[in-house]
Image (cartoon, rainbow, N blue to C red):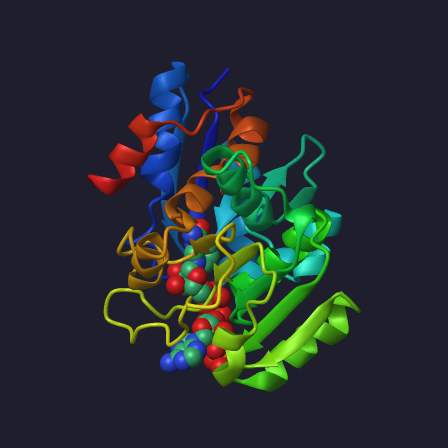
Length: 275
Ligand code: NAP
């Protein structure tokens, strides 16, 4: 049997951490497989994808700009990928068909469960900052985890309203410039915007009104401790950084393609941080 292959498809692809992530697990678990970066333009995506199973690929992660095309090319789609409207994990079945999943929301929740085991979404409202692509996965996973209410603030209010229309009555749209005042009783505060990332402006949301038992998490992981997380720490709030989400979202794909469930451990974090 040839060694199993998997990879990540994007354009550009050089920045992807996924080869290091999966490479770490392959080595740790002693699996003689390979996980490779594949640079593919939008024009070539569908044809190239269809040829991968014939080359021995078990599946691929998909990143920008292919997350929407990946959903439409798939023969079957998980409920969570359909709800999020994008796929990041494709698996090639023995009969040649392609199944699509989105594991971002799973990664988000697993990261909180691992690093804040006492956190329980069902215990109160959440405040989600941002209504871009990543926000959809976060909203969907928080609703599945049982948040009682979800306040959503985005610079472009219309995008938040579109998500509220899709995700239903638990979503309350908040004006972007009122986000700092929308923290009454909030248990989970999530930055899903790109603000705070190296080279981007800082997030203009203050945590003065956050309850003392609120958990603050940021999807941005460059830097690992964003100014937003640092401000939360100063306030004595529990924080979880965004790197763990990236690590955990890789688990379901790896297990499907290589047959063993990998662990997210400190060695993996260090491997990614040192890369
Ligand atoms: P996106 O679709 O481009 O959305 C960007 C979001 O940021 C939108 O809500 C946008 O608001 C907001 N934003 C951008 N510039 C802003 C500004 N100057 N002022 C106020 N709001 C601003 O991006 P995405 O795919 O959702 O990704 C968002 C972030 O999450 C990125 O930093 C990404 O690296 C990170 N991420 C991390 C993980 C992980 O595993 N940790 C996974 C996915 C994404 P408008 O709608 O008003 O433009």
